[in-house]
Length: 253
Ligand SMILES: C[S@@+](CC[C@H](N)C(=O)[O-])C[C@H]1O[C@@H](n2cnc3c(N)ncnc32)[C@H](O)[C@@H]1O
Image (cartoon, rainbow, N blue to C red; front, side):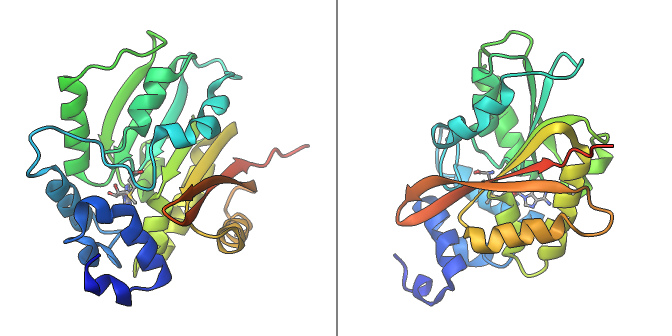
């Protein structure tokens, strides 16, 4: 490992652990700037250059590690819309969204959204080059350039069934100016989720810190009330990962 990594903070080391395999020359610029579109554009440009064939880049881990947390949430459709709406928020070039599209038994509309147009273009090109056959022929897959601090400009209230966030809130919380953005994103996620819906955050942040943050944010004035839970995903390269599930609280009248 390069010498500069030794001086990083704990969270910095974890960021490096997540991406050092492919991008060791670029990690210093990314750390502290993980809420910046330009930093991610460079990350995905570098990750795709020098390789003739596209390869999905997975932050932490891929679909197989999280499918048991994700797929059970797509087994019932309690509303009249034909499609369950799924958002992979800050998808990067992960195969998570395409894998959900492929494996879901019920018809889903999976939106893979990212602030980086480079990541979105790579995903679009890959989907065109290599068409995926969904299990359910009515399912849809789309790729959208979207700043998740502006979710409400793209989704109506109570219109989304499942939001998946693998490393995106982590990126915001760990950047110099991103904490306010992370709060804004959580607030908007709760607004656009159906009452039967869930937000899943996959993260390496310890429950002591993340649960406190989620519970505190969900009690702020103007934020939909929510229940928060956590399960361990497992350990990878010596780091423990968690799945935080946030569900809008049902208001009994
Ligand atoms: C840690 S990476 C995780 C990528 C992907 N989810 C994965 O598991 O490989 C964080 C992602 O969030 C995206 N991102 C950062 N800020 C964002 C924002 N405001 N809106 C949408 N995406 C954002 C970045 O471009 C990057 O792709």
